Image (cartoon, rainbow, N blue to C red; front, side):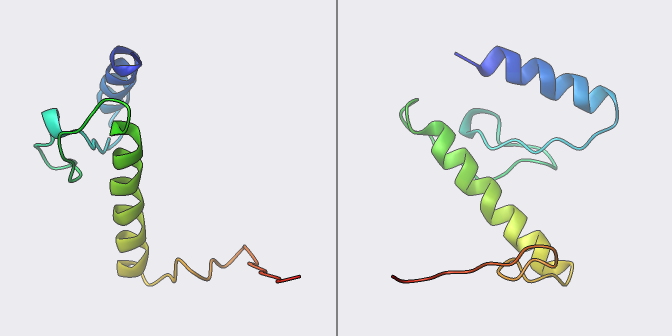
Length: 80
C-alpha cells in the first residue's frame, strides 16, 4: 500500500542527485539494487530491511569501521 509513495520519494531523491538503494525483487536491477527475493507482501519489508542491514554492515567494514563498536555509541549488556 505504501509503494506509490516510496517510489515517488525515490524518484524525487534521484532527481536531486541522491543515490537511492532499492531492495525489491520486482525492480532489483541497476547500480543501486540490493539483493531481494519474491515473497508474500506481508514479509517483504522485513526482507528489504535485512538486505539493507547487510549492505550497511559490509560498507562499514570496507570503510574501516567496526559495526559492532561504533565510535560514538557505548554498548552495554548486563545479565541480572
